[in-house]
Image (tube, rainbow, N blue to C red):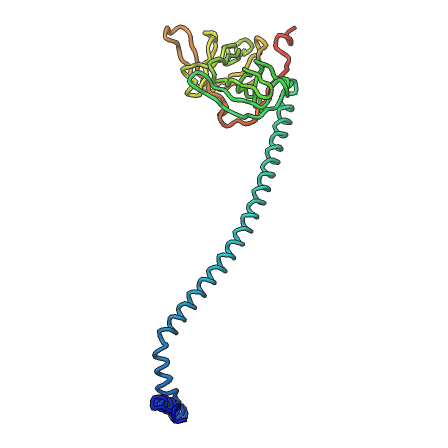
Amino acid sequence: MKAILTKRTIIIFSTALLLAFITIISVNVFNSSGPVTGFANTVTRPVRALATTVASAFGDIFSAIYRYEALEKRNEELVARIAILEANYRAADELAEENNRLRALQGFRERHGGYEHEMASLIGRGSDNFSSTFTINMGYANSKIERGMAVATEEGVLIGQVHDVGAAQSTVITILDTKFSAAAYVGRRDTGDEGDSSATVRGDFTYMRSGLLMLEKFDADLIVRKGDTVITSGIGGVFPAGLIVGEVDVVSRNDSGISRFATVRPLLDLENISLVFVITGFESTEQRDT
């Protein structure tokens, strides 16, 4: 026993008892944990502060992860809803386009019941310094379209002529193209008679870039004014009679001062046309006269 209770052991044991005693007295007398607890708190304060900071940081991280997952789920839901809305919009757009096609077809039949025709859609455009063309989705394999046939709108406005026919698509020259030419009626004579007020309307290199046609070869006594309507005469049998080409823009004289010519402005902006009718059959002027 004496070997165990060395001086050092006695000192440690005594110190522990003293500290325990002081702690008990402090708690009971002063209602405080005493200097020992205060010392322990002081020593561990940095550790506890760091632990609190780390815990708060982890809490923020977990909260951010939760919010991210919630936002990601919401985003997926919105993407799915947008896909559904886009599908519905496409379906409605296709239905509206089909309704427009049917109305246009019915309107053309009512206005031009004597024509045989094929309805077509524009699928491409092309132009350069010498030509003005567009491509339609009809050819010899899926229609009766042939080279030279007139191409018009629902309202009976002439906009071009079939130039090249492929299997499932065809190239149309517009009325502005330098290769286009048609017999036309325009103006009136002093007597008011329009029966023989013929002229030629054609595409012209000089005016094509300005969106105009050339009107020429009309008689000297023919009264032609700005705003007069130019329509196909049917002479020659290439185009049916009565298709509207455009309106007279400016009447001028050529360099010799002897003959006159005029520029003609199309009624429609050819860049905004998407649906056309190819006239595949009609009764020509010569057939009616016989």
